[in-house]
Length: 316
Image 1: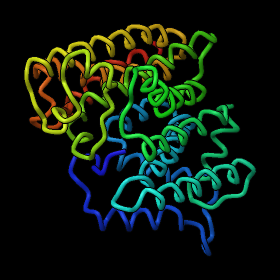
Image 2 (image 1 turned 180 degrees about the vertical axis):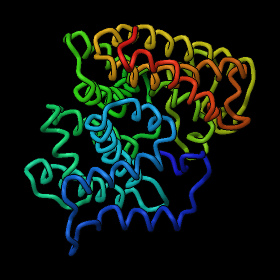
Image 3 (image 1 turned 90 degrees about the vertical axis):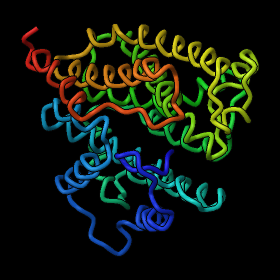
Image 4 (image 1 turned 180 degrees about the horizontal axis):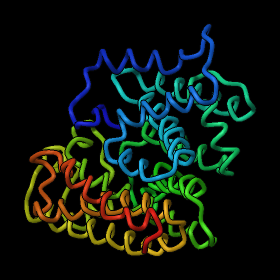
């Protein structure tokens, strides 16, 4: 839920307001696109915005790649609706309208260019409706909560905004064992925890502290310290603890790869390794996430994609 573009640069408030007006006005008084045009709309958005994901999507055959773009587009719009300087009440109304539009779209009543593609994706791949609803519940939590008391509380948030997405993804990729569900849940937690650690400074500047209060107290580091970007031994100890927790979820999610088909395994491993590399980059910087945003180079992300090409084609 960041007011940043794919390059990590702050988006002007006026641009955000314009985007939000457009997001919910698509389709009003206009001819909505057919299915192929809807998928094309989603793919353009994913190519433009999904800096850490689109290169992985490209490893999939055309139908599942387009489905991943439709899923991403739905999630991107939901995120964008709660960004920006508007009052919380206005954001809540916008999110409620997006939820209403989802319910209508899943009955074949479309109000946005992405709806035909999303509806087709849900039906064709058997994505549980609950996954999409959970994501919207998670997005809504950012409107109602600016801190979490316990890790159990934070886990609920991570599950909704990330694990639910992973559970939708494996239906597109195809999986052959119900154990994949729990592994996908763990993968979502791992990736979201990595996001949280990478963006601690940016989030704190907006008054949002995701690290559980019980963890802050354990290491004698306060929310005020975090908002002041205080980097000291207490912070490093806190971050070591958080990194080890995230690593444990990466380990728990590792078996998922073997339960996916070749193309699904390839795309999962690229996404998985990209975020694990981000986590290790935090460690290599000695946990100083305040200095500048941690990111992987385009060349590094391309190399991660190249490494899985033999898997993509079933060569090993």
